[in-house]
Length: 276
Ligand SMILES: [Zn+2]
Image 1 (cartoon, protein in one colour):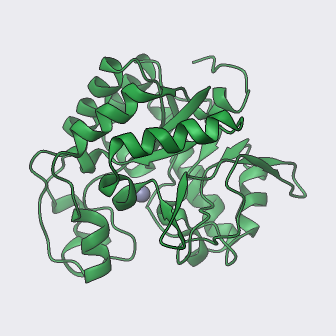
Image 2 (cartoon, rainbow, N blue to C red; image 1 turned 180 degrees about the vertical axis):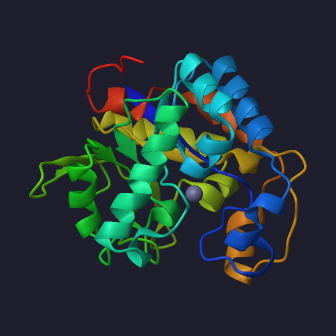
């Protein structure tokens, strides 16, 4: 069974809600790492014969269109991570639609016209922003991967497998990130939760879901495999999410990628292959 390896293509400084050294007004002054780290991730996927879905931030596509073109040329799917990395529940339906449109224009300028999938920054489509699914459907998106079955960012009661969400503008397929039941909670198999879990265990969880006919989605960021990530002082929860157990993650990710089969999310959901 094919599973999804998803990548949120953003800089190390794209931390939701950050003020101070990582505030929006400083982004253009901070050292860029995204081209090298995304290329390294592309090389890793090639080495493991894995194909994935890259949810690219429009701000990145505007600055590095050649990187976006390379992602497509190397056989992967490109989706939208929005334009300015804002949490959806902090936007209005109108400003969310504008953010999607600006990102779509940046991706089109980089040569990607067929964008079907969306991933919200910080899994921010939840009970505070369910209206966003209708905005996505109206904007022509067919799938979304932004609703996490986890506490704090999402809701532990959300479905753990791909499912359709109805809106007045048509259905959107929702593909939640993989979680593992541990310590009485749904532990994310993305971000810090994926980094702290032994590859053998991740592979067993994937095999268990696949045996029940359920494909899974993992999520990583280019900055998680940066061999020398810039360090800034963040509040404790953000510091943990961004810096916990980065060491050796590229090697552990390689073991996971070799332990299961990965294809673009659109294909796993049964959509026709992209024409670009
Ligand atoms: Zn992000």
